[in-house]
Amino acid sequence: MTQLRLNLVEGSVSFRFTPQAAQDLKGAIATLMENLKSTAASGAGSRPSPKPAMEYQHAGEVFVEIFCNPNIWPSPFAAKVLVTVRDERIRLTTEAELTRLLEDVNEFLEQVS
Image (tube, rainbow, N blue to C red; front, side, top):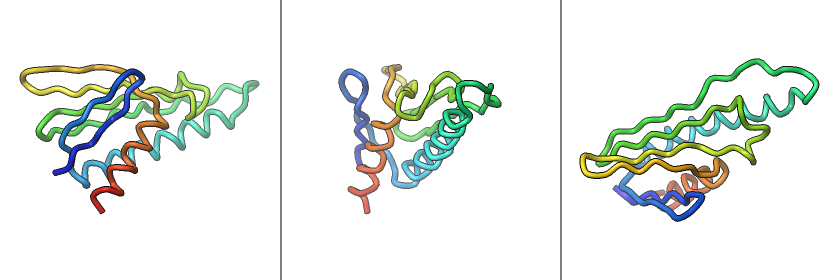
């Protein structure tokens, strides 16, 4: 397993992650991005239909959870996600920019391929 480094709003966190888990996370982010884009494209004059929240979870050496409600962000570029990384000794919960998260996952996948 290789280390995935997530760059947060302030600082970063690294943990062991599998390529398959990274692919799953990338797929969840892609769906979230589509939901955010469709909300942004609906325009300011009309009320967009509510989109489901992204709730990604992975239980490996550490438990990773990434959450984002697409209904509160005007665009994918403004969106932030709530990141939780925990094991039996420590729990870290913080925010990360969605676009930066996608860059970090893509960089990880390039390293392992």
